[in-house]
Image (tube, rainbow over all chains, first blue to last red; front, side, top):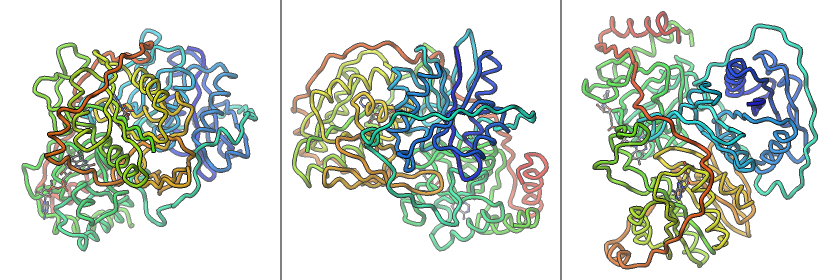
Amino acid sequence: MNKILVFLEGQKNTLKRTSCEAISAARTLSSAAGIPFAGIIINGSKEHVKCAGEYGMANVINAKHELMETYSSTAAAAILHQVIKSENVDVILFAGNAKGLELAPRVAAKLEAGYIGDCVGLGIEDGYIIAKKPVYAGKAQITAKVNSDIKVFSLRPNVFTATKSGESITMTTKDYAPNLSEDDKKAFVSALMKNEGKMDVLEADIIVSGGRGIKGAENYNLIESLASAFGAAVGASRAVVDAGWRPHSEQVGQTGKTVSPNLYVACGISGAVQHLAGMSTSKVIVAINKDKDAPIFKVCDYGIVGDLFTVVPKLAEKVKHLTGK
Amino acid sequence: MNILVCISRVPDTATRILVGPDGKTIDTQGIKYVISPYDEYGIEEGLRLKEKNGGTVTAVTVGAEASTDILRTALAMCVDKAVLIKADTQKDSFFVAKNIAEYAKELNPDIIFMGRQSVDYDSLQMPSMLGEFLGIPSVSVVSKLVVADGKASAERDIEGGKEIVESSLPCIISCQKGLNEPRYPKLPDIMKAKSKPIEMKEPVQTDVKVTVLGMSIPLKQRIGKILSDSDADIDELVRMLHEDSKII
Ligand SMILES: Cc1cc2nc3c(=O)[nH]c(=O)nc-3n(C[C@H](O)[C@H](O)[C@H](O)COP(=O)(O)OP(=O)(O)OC[C@H]3O[C@@H](n4cnc5c(N)ncnc54)[C@H](O)[C@@H]3O)c2cc1C
Ligand SMILES: Nc1ncnc2c1ncn2[C@@H]1O[C@H](COP(=O)(O)O)[C@@H](O)[C@H]1O
């Protein structure tokens, strides 16, 4: 192996947390394999580069092009391809978020390289990067390796820990002018709709989700007030979304979103395999359910057997007392 | 419109998964196989586009002889044509994408539908990979789609909101729940599908890009502390989240 490249994404004046996680993973791989690592950002800023430095990344390539003022996955892949070739990179890491999951396989295909997506572990054995990845909706896990010279991986968000290096390093930033034409931009983002004022389950450290046990949309304020006490995002089971009580963007599970927060609180959710598929890698799981035999209790860290209509408001009160939120 | 839908054959999502004797793949005994759920949205979207604009819908899968069962289901949902690209052993995504690309070059479709992920290996790569092999754009995890005036406008969930991606045709759309409600095959169509032809194709071989070394069932190392709904226990929960897990 020769050199690791991490695809970085900015968010206002910092890097996205998932990018910092990828930098930290690259740092670990780099010291295990004894090879250098660098980052690539598209139309990045000084602040983005500085943030990469704080996480121990000394080299950042800033690819600038006006065609990338609106994002295009086909054009981004073209840029990455050029940078990878000119920098002689052979290990490429992406955050496994919406953008990374779309972009990484396209870059891999351009390089005729093997790709392993949604990794939850990366290590080195016998000179190979060994990836761990959930399969069958998290019911099993595989270890796998890429055989091609160039290897591409994406990392499940919030599984790898982002750690600052704590050392001051000398940054080298290289501006790069990619060769792009309109023809590279066959698909591009034409509009963005932010969830105003609402925290997204994909970005939250804590998620409070409701299930069919909540009985109706009108009772969801219970879930919302527990979420607000925690400073958490609101999630839902499919039963709740299918009943029209909550929007699909909040659904957690196999046909919803895959989340991995520090704390996942499941209220009135039975714990069907398809729901577990979306949240089983959460760090701590709390379940509140009136049925002591509910399957969710088999996969939780802390469970409360009781009626959510009395437990949730009490819990919200006590949490609020502690957090002051 | 010339529409291609790629479908993959996976264990029913409620299936209990056990590791097989080779330690690398699942124990396939007694497993019921279905069309990967996201691919059903692809079939439905393809059929709706055809109903609106005319044309043909072709379903393709790369797999062993046994995969004809999901092609029959697609035929019962009323796709016009079914194609099996034969692969007798388990192959990696690169092989599957290359082979679909070979077939797509022959068929020359205006639009290709795939699922967001195949719920066996959850490889999450085929749509972008196929797009690159064909030199056409792809949009992943689409929950709303408008195809008109020679272009596609696709809505997809991103962290913190949604985005609309505009794409020229031909393009690949990877389907997410919410795109549509897939139809159930009707009994007469199920009967008719039994005798419809399935086109068989020999695969092109590719280098093995990814090797699976082992499979395991992840051990759930959860604390598993069950409490009652008493005030004291709720206090205890908050204390543990605060002091033991240090989350709040
Ligand atoms: C292909 C496929 C994909 C799927 N994808 C998803 C997915 O992405 N996400 C998902 O969530 N599901 C998904 N499902 C559905 C899944 O199988 C379950 O049907 C669903 O998760 C059940 O939701 P639930 O737990 O809210 O409801 P239920 O299973 O009905 O559970 C309700 C729970 O609430 C408890 N309860 C009731 N009243 C109270 C009360 N007063 N206090 C406390 N507890 C109470 C009950 O004991 C019960 O355990 C999918 C299914 C299929 C077939
Ligand atoms: N063997 C296969 N044959 C045809 N299409 C497939 C096959 N495997 C995956 N696909 C398609 O690619 C999508 C994404 O799969 P994956 O990238 O493997 O998670 C699936 O939803 C299918 O539409």
